Image 1 (cartoon, rainbow, N blue to C red):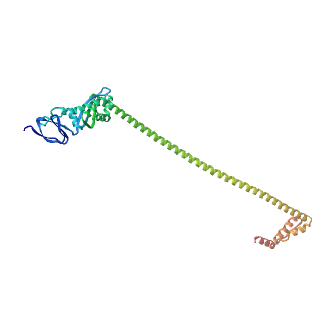
Image 2 (cartoon, rainbow, N blue to C red):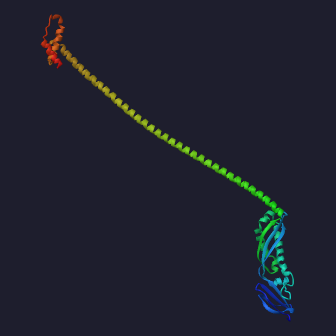
Image 3 (cartoon, helix red, strand yellow):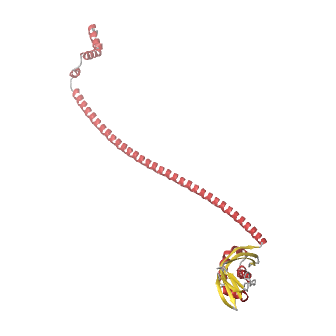
Length: 339
């Protein structure tokens, strides 16, 4: 009505009001009435925006890979962006007058594409599909410091690469090769495990042999100790026997000396007795035989004297004609004998 309109923008939108070629009002969260025929309105969203991207590049070994990721940005300098791109609203204030706002995300994707191409073309396929994190760390500072981004007044808030995928045929080939490598590694793991088992078994056998050797060595030491003990006992027994033999020899020597001394004493006694007998015999030889007989018969018992008498009678039997012995004498002699 009469060209008077009303506009209200949120706090995340920067509004520029131009009238007669000059900025008459600007800022975020503006709300005002304006005269449509002579006013141009420029609205620039300043909230953070997430832009997904996906594009294809070629690695250093001429393999095609697909890079999928996301970039997050915000408009830090709206006036600078408004000078380079058309964010003017239509007279109704409901839509943009050009498609420049829709082209802004694509311009960022193009910048990412250029930066990523320079990095991907330096890497072989195997390294490229594994180093997405390294690629992110390399590209983020370059995007932040990019002259194009600064010229547009943009601020890069985040950058991430979700996946780097090769072509399906290449992926299947890599999968087959990786599968073979995994199977090879599994075989090597089995071999190492078996080898470790063999080494463990060998170590166990060596430990058993070492234990047996130690046991045998200990047994030999015990046998040697027993032999040394037996040798010591035998040596002591030998010394004991030698001592006993020495004692026996000494005893025998003492006995020999005793026997010699006894023999000497016996000989001396015999010589003394012989000398006495000899002296007696000499003395008797010079005396009367009848006196000697009387001396011999002295102290004899009656029956002994009778026996001596009968002996003398028997010696002179040729001179005796007849001898009468009374029964009383015989009875008396026999009775004494029985008694």
